[in-house]
Length: 243
Image (tube, rainbow, N blue to C red; front, side, top):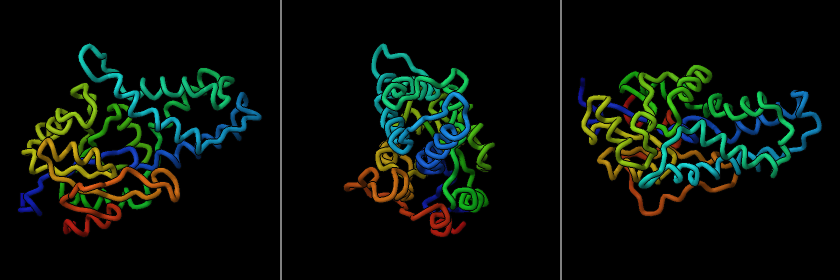
């Protein structure tokens, strides 16, 4: 393989928020549910607030799987637990079992940001590219097929039954891709994820997603963190990497 910047030999990507627009996707599907599902007739749901509340439960749910004696469960299961807790708050108790299951699997159908597919294809022309997500493998495969994401490989914390930022997840990716940690770069929109990758010895690229939480809503602060690359989107990152 030809020498690459900083001797980077492969790229791995955070997915939720970095590659795909979870918030916009959930809002769209919620609005479709209100408009088309028979049992949902008359639903008056604040779908942006619902999407935000569902995502807000993500980190606390993962925290329940950490620590001595805690049982690991996959993200599909955690998403369903969060969803079930939100049903009374948003008046969704009337949905059928099939409708609830379909709604929970919206995370398998998240749509990419406008630059995602073209940017990934440019980067893939020079680097092997893979997910490195807390999402379970089946979720990531369904998402890739639905959104046309051109991964060479699908890696998940599920493979080591850990969630980022546990160092085992980042080191697993380097091991399975056959590179040293310092030859692997995580691309993410979340500084805490990138900080975890840095602690495990990976290179990092911060890609800004200012609309992840909605227009005008700030994302996770960068603070004093410094990354190997900072880009406005995947196309900008590809240009910086000569791809």
